[in-house]
Structure formats: C-alpha cells, structure tokens
Amino acid sequence: MSEYNAVHIQVLEWPEAVRKRPGMYIGSTGERGLHHMAQEVLQAAANEVLSGRASRVEAVLTADSGLRVSHDGARQADLTRALTVLPTCWDGPRGRELIAWGASCLAVVNALSVRLVAEEHRDGTTVRQEYVRGGLLVPPTVTGPTDRTGTTVTFHPDPEVFGTAAFDADALVGHLRELALLNRALDIVLTDERSTPPRTERLHHPAGLVDFTTRLGGDPAATLTVEAADERMGGTLDLALCWTGGGGLHGFANSRRTDEQHSTHLLGFRDGLAAALGRSGLPAGLTAVVSVKLDAPEFGGATRRRLDNGPVRAGVAAAVRQAVEHRHAGRG
Image 1 (tube, rainbow, N blue to C red):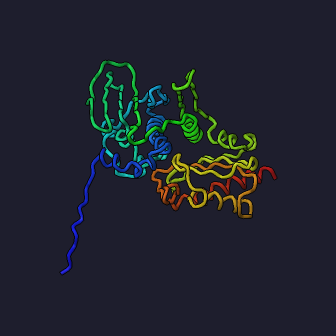
Image 2: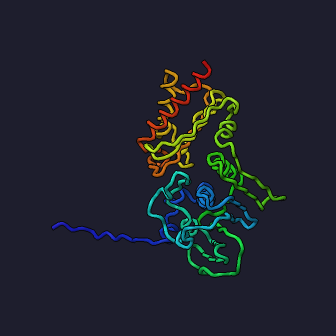
Image 3: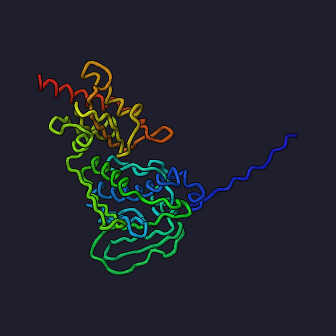
C-alpha cells in the first residue's frame, strides 16, 4: 500500500498573509516596494477626483518619514473595509475613468505600516481610526464636528519590513506627473517637509497628452491628437502623435504603463500607422503616447504590463488610420 505524507496547508488571513510575504503584493521590500505603497494611496485619492467626487489631491512627505494623502471628496466606499479587506479582483476598480492598480490597495498599505491613521470628514462629523501593523488600535471614533468633506490617510512604512528605505521625492513627483499628464482633470500638490525649506510641486496638466509628447521632445504646434470613444472595444482612446522629437512610443491602459511590443492598443497603433503610411515600422523621429481607458481592462504577462483586450487592437487601428490619413490629406 502506498503511503502518502500529510501536507499541512496553513491559510493565513490579513494582515499576517501580507506581512509574511510582502513581495507578493508590492514586489519588493526595498525602495521599489516602498514607492508601490505610496502609489496605492495616491492613486486611491486620484480616483476620487477622476470619479467626480473630489477636486484635488494633496500629499505630504512628513518630517517623521511618513506620507499623508488627502482629497476633498465625500468618499462613497466603506473606508474601514478598504483598509482591512484584501480585494478579490487583481485589477482593482473597474471603469474607464479610473486608474487601475494591483491587488495591494489600501489594505496592504495598512498591513505593512507600523502606524496608519485615517480621518474622514463627512455628514458634518470627523471620524478617526488608527492601526498598528494592520491591527486595530483605535476604532472609528467621532472626534468632532466639521463643515467640510474629505479623507486623509497618513501612514508610516514599517521598518521591520523596509529597513532604512526612504521615500524618494523625485520618484514620486515623476509618478504623479505621469498621472496628471494622462488625466488632465487631476490637480495634485506634493510637499516634502523633510527638506529645508519644504519643497512643493504642483502636478496639473490641462493640455494632457500634448504636454506629455512635448516633455518627450515633440513639437506641440505639430502634434496630432485623437480623442475617441468606441463601445466595441469598451472604452476610449486618447492619443498624441508628433513626427519629430524621437521620443518613441509610450502606451498606457487605465493609466498603467504597458508593454510596447505586445499590448493590443500598441499593436493597433502600429497597424493603423502602417495602413495610413503604406509601410511598416515606426518613423525614426516619432514621439507618441497612446492611452486607453477601458471598462474592463485585461492585463497579462509576468509583470501584468501587457494589455490583452482583443477588440482594442482593431478599434485603435481604425482611429489612428483615419486621423493620420485625414492629416495627410489636409496637407495635400
């Protein structure tokens, strides 16, 4: 008779599941993982603006090595649940106006913080809750009246997880600028209180992708733009293209940077450009940014940076071909 060794499977609940294997949720326990944590909180606040519930985001790198992120909207979701329950869907929120993120979200930030404090201003009161390494320290408590709306989350990354890693203000500014370039409604202010005097950056780009291609070396006066909605691909296309500057091709899906070679929206861009120009390959001086916002984005690949939505390829190709042919016909 064959004998089988018993296999004992330990099912870990939040926050232990996150604290034992943080790399599964944030990629690393170094600077990259630390910035992933920051991006989760910043993008959660940015989504409130893109959903029309808030008008601005303010972030502060505090002198005691924390990050405080605030928005002025009336949050619709249950904040306590967001801080303590891991999402079951890897790609986070759905909806073409939202920024897609990974499974970590606020609950993972909470689990990997030595201290997290959340304050919510709504319905005439301020409610505060506090956690230590994901464990509830102070339950949601009304601390007083208020005449405003908004949510503030302040967290301090756990040195037991991240060691001496510290936030890089330049890296965060770069990420926030990218979000602002891709989402012209965003107005974000980042202040670094660790420097003397404090450094403040405002990230707001009403010109959107035209500003993006300009920063990559393109000529704003000669930039071709496309904004189109296509229900067949389940979303919208935002494109800026310049034949000069040599900035290359950059793709984003729901504000997430995507792989240039295999993502369907970038394959569609190449298809449409080839059809319009009558030749394959990207022109040497091309500078282009292709951003799609999809109701149900499907990401694949080891790093989940490849967009797999099939109908997107044909939709982007048709829009690009029409826009480029129209521009060339106008010049003719």
